[in-house]
Amino acid sequence: MLRGEHVMARLARGRLVPHRLSPEDGRVVEVAGELCGVYAAHRQAPRAGLEARLAALEEELGPRLDARRGFKIVRALAKLLEESATWEAPTEADPYTIRTRVFELAAALPEPPAGEPGLLEAPTREDVLGRVASEIGFGDVADLMYADRQGAQLLAGFEGPSPEALIERYNVAQVQGVLYAARELVVDLDRGADARLVFHYVKKMALIYRLEPTPRGYRLYLDGPLSIFGGTRKYGLRLAKFLPGLLLTSPWRLSANVEWKGRDALLDLDSEKNDLKSHYLGPKDAQEGDDVRGAFVRAWERAKDTGGWELGFGAGVLTFPELKTALVPDFTLTNAAGEEVHLEILGFWSERNLVERVALLREARARGHRVLVAASGKLGASREALSEAVAGGVIPFKERLAAKDVLAALDGERSLAEAGA
Image (cartoon, rainbow, N blue to C red; front, side, top):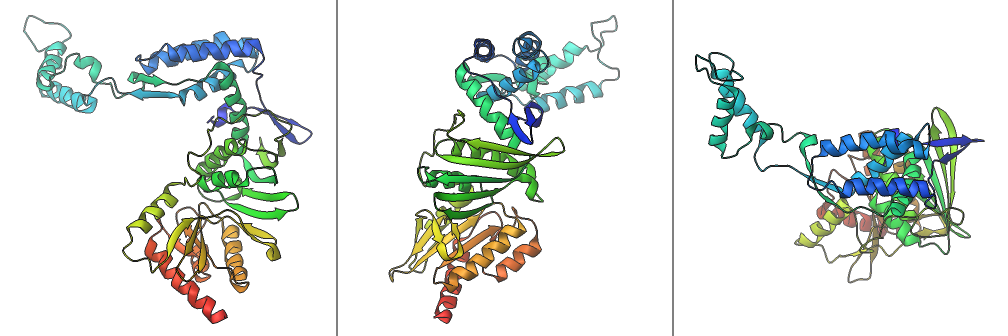
């Protein structure tokens, strides 16, 4: 992912056009290849050396790409390569302990340690370092004292992309960077699109969504980071990470309202008209989930008594044609009597989003649908809004959704259903 300083775009008649590089441009491929080579050749060398080399390449390679912004492009390409690098400490010793012991010994001396031996045979700097070395069993104490600094880290591994793949990743990352400043995304999924795959990434990234069935498929509304009050940076990163998941399928159209340099702008993307390529491999498992959902599955499996209910993964989209809306439940609970209840776990939520969910629960229950919704108190706007939603049937949780809370909600939902009958 790129930081805001790396993102470039231009406004054309109110529409935002993110910067892009051509993988067919020889100059661009050459620069990308040289950067990949620098990382590959730097294995087991300190980070500080690599950073110095990259800084020099900004001035050397940048002008080949763009006389004014070339350094920024090189910096962004290097940032993406950094994601493929793994770093390790240069020693097993604890630099903090070494520093502390060196300073303790030096402070205990009547005079500061001398740089070289003198006539009075006062302790020298080397005497202090040698004593510490004998105590800890490591040599080169002077080098180890600051081995925990980032610049001292060694490049342990680098699984870099090809130059062409790096350029493709850059083009996607520029669009992702624009989404950091989005208010709302609207994605139209046509029938040929793999909606289940798209919703997998909506859920995995814990995004705030609304869904409407359309004659051609579905219309997906995603809140942008500028539309929520808290956690905007974290939410913005998750929204940006959704984009490569969307790129795995087609056809679709995306429209985003974006604030760009103090002005409102529109970002338009169409799967049939762009050549953006995802670097995601797709879900390893169609049932793969995030930490909250995975933890709930494990909690359910450990539960001693589930009241005869069996937990299964959601089958897909649950439509409410009469309400002109739809949900994507995470789980479906069934029992021996053939009862079926759907459970959705909200990730991030806004007050508006939660109010809409409570209204939907009420309407769904009135029409014979059995749906439960759980919401985290850490990923929403206010405790007051969550308290009101709990009164409307929402299951609250902090970091982990407990099986007992869902079972209690199942009993309460059954009572409401029987009362309604």
